Amino acid sequence: MDYDPMVMDAEAMGPSVKITEAGAQHVDFELQNVDLAFANSLRRVVLAEVPTMAVDLVEVEANTSVLADEFIAHRLGLIPLNSKNVDDVSYSRDCDNCDNYCDQCSVTLTLHARCTGDEIMKVYARDLVVDQGRPNQWVGNPVITDVDGLGTIICKLRKDQELRMKCIAKKGIAKEHAKWAPVAAVGFEYDPHNKLKHTDLWYETDAEKEWPKSKYAEWEEPPQEGEPFDYDAAPDRFYFELETVGNLDPDAVVQQGIKVLQQKLAAVIQDLTEGEGGANGDAYGGAPRSPDVGMNGGNWQDQGYTTPFGSGNASAWGGGATTPFGATPYGQNGSGWS
Amino acid sequence: MSSKKKTQEPDADVSMGDVPAADTEVAVADVNDPAMLAFEEQRIRILPGSLATAASFEFQKEDHTLGNALRPEVEFCGYSIPHPSEEVMNIRIQTYEGTTAVEALEKGFNDLMDLCDVVAEKFVAAREENVSRMES
Ligand SMILES: [Zn+2]
Image (cartoon, rainbow over all chains, first blue to last red):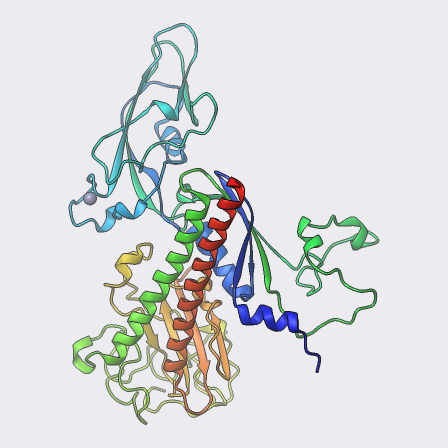
């Protein structure tokens, strides 16, 4: 068997991260020596589960513009708001301090614009006035990156048209609504030479000629002429290109992403360990429950196993139903539920 | 294929896609708040028919992010999302003698946690190096 010291070294080192480029709103990095599933989890979490701030509630006091209230409310929602240290903000829905919203779980921005001249007036994100009462000094500030310091355009007004609105920004994640996305895009790439054949390239005559190579193709060894397919090969270099919308620093997005992943893990680990050590039997009542009653014991599922639907060992689906895993060749089914 | 009425056959070919709509008492509490998760009621349960070394787990409010990333060292591990509009993810684990499925599951999660720590650490180090490289 071939012994490649390079490979051994890389494996011994464990995961590694190399940043190739970074700026105020983007970071490009290579993640090495992790499996595809983990890299993908990081991508998913960064894209959809890192919390940010966005306008979620709009109280319209006056709108005589040509745009409908909900049209403007939607536009307000999409304005990126600074979300630095968003951990200081609690989720409105489980705020202990209030029933609706308060300065611990929201930031209020007021918009008041009226066109008095003959010229068309443009209302921008910079016209949003942020209330003082808020969890920290950054959170809720409209993100303004253009040279003129205007920010996103919200609406245009003609003479005597007016906007008067109170915008309530809340913390949320993009899984609920895309306005909370911290990133405009996450580039995710691996195996630039498609050696693993995970991509099936469409072509007229020759895929090799018709498809331009990614810039990462130079980083990896191109396939040799007539090289046999390696059935054991697995991807281990992943190229991320992360571009934020400006509400969080790009590296904060990555770090928060990992944190979210860890919070998920912590929650399930806690759920598992609590279930094991915790009181079993009646204490749980009819609630769905996890593996508690000493799994190592022989007949752990004969007692105390409850489903939300009934008592004792009743199956969740009534008698005679099969579970997706019930009838396996790996062992007899648990007694009493079929 | 209707699985509700089907009588159980020992060698019935039951695909993972056929999980009947299981839990009607899905908690309304919010998924999106990691802080809340800790206080929530049990989100994990063992599915009927499980043995100590071959068990199926049902996770409420989890998806590919956790299901696919979990790679315990066991004889068999697989996950499925029975229906895209239900926030449920199932994991099947079969272990070799000596460890139970629950232990393997737990170890899998703990290893993932450690991996996250390492990657976070490496990222911070790479970022610092990048900053100092830019400044010099
Ligand atoms: Zn509140």
